[in-house]
Image (cartoon, rainbow, N blue to C red; front, side, top):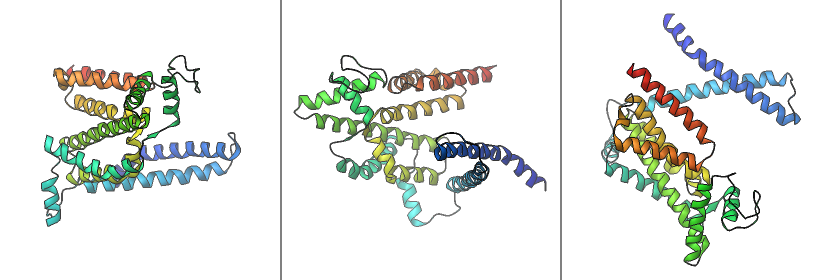
Length: 294
């Protein structure tokens, strides 16, 4: 009975979170149905259904993660060979191996999407770069509606391609560069997960997910501010987590402190609303470091 009670107490925050998410979903559903917020009995059962689905999904995810992190007592021959090839130990060889897997799996998408993919936002940024009228300006200046740094990067690839005879090829080159940088960040993240104690099956599943899930590949090879921002966020998060784990000792090393500042700067330049988030995370990092030293 004591074990059951402890288990129930651990689930109380999850139940509360599920109810909150269900209620918020019911508000959105009400607005979608009536074009305004209308309190109706439908919201009650809608809240309960979403809360139950949310709760069950989290429990299922916990079971899956627990299984992925569990090391079996015996291994099959195929599993042993895979573990020999993909050890996920931090090394240049493992980094290159994971990167090659992702490149090969993403290559068909890269070929099919030639000469690259851009979003509406990127189109407006390129018009600004060329001095043409767009949604945000008359073309005489660069708007900060989207990060100017992103506009400069995208515009540089555009002009580089135009210099060699095809602006499309320049944009395609930009998509390839963003894809390769993203692959490097994902490969380093997989290795870091193993470094901090994630199970082998978890890391292998992580690699397979990134390799075969189409939206990851398509998003990562799209020339848009969000895909440019993502690799720097991943690297920043890794350094942030490790800095907290080491109680700030990591940042005493010049190379990691420089990488920390550089990734933070690049996040601020590639996505405007990250400035507030970055300040929040830096505050907590400083607070944790002071708390652990005192």
